[in-house]
Amino acid sequence: MDKEMVAEVNLMENALYIVKEGRLTKVSPKEHGQDIVIWKNGQVLDVDRSERIRLNGQEVI
Image 1: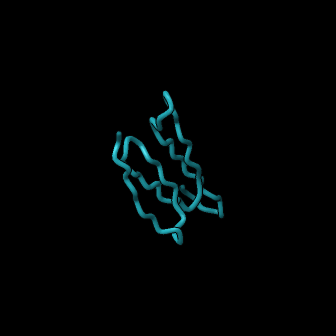
Image 2: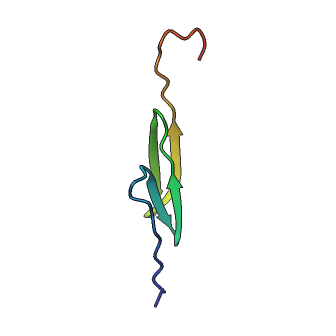
Image 3: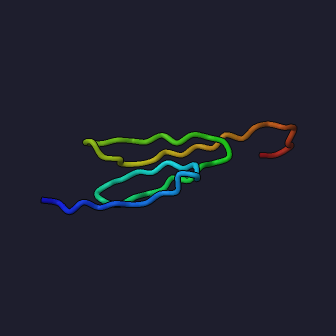
């Protein structure tokens, strides 16, 4: 029988948490953008992060 493992997270902090093979990974929030979770065989394989930049008259981004 596997031993139960417990982790503690701060519920006042906005974040996404991924548990894979007993390890906890925190995905920190971005100012703007999206995170796509890629699954394979029932486990998280990758997190695809993209960033959105709002145009506010910048000459260069």
